[in-house]
Image (tube, rainbow, N blue to C red; front, side, top):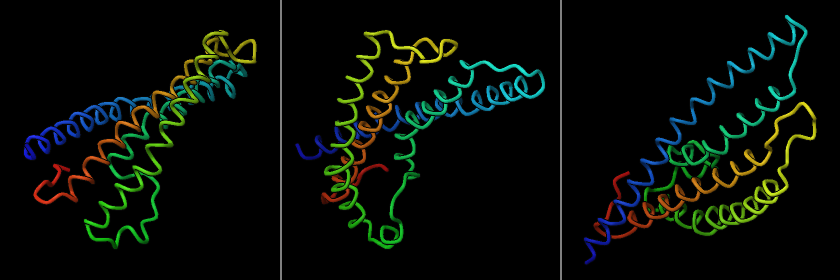
Length: 178
């Protein structure tokens, strides 16, 4: 029974980690798209003295999507912000406790709060078909607002994976795959 539970938890963390890995690699393509878009926009502005508001807004939206959708990938690869002055000196068991408690007490509740509030925010934007305040801007502002919800949903999934891995690290004979 105990062995089956550990096996199931490992399967869950593997599935989440694989999903987030694909998401992170897919999201990385947005960086290339953003570079091309910025270069095009700069060239049009300074060489041809022509600029489109919707292109500038699209740059902002792609930039936001990169960070919102890339947050879970950053957490997975431990590239997120952390006070490493202390953490780096901790034993693996202490690190597991810090990750478990930090994820359970701070990260998961924060993700849930942002998911709930941003969904309402995006839904209201969608219902009123909110667009850019600029007449020449992007017509569907709610798309990037839903990206907030989606980004925090993926971050929540990765937090669950981290929580499970940390918990397994603390159980005798149940080391996670990492």
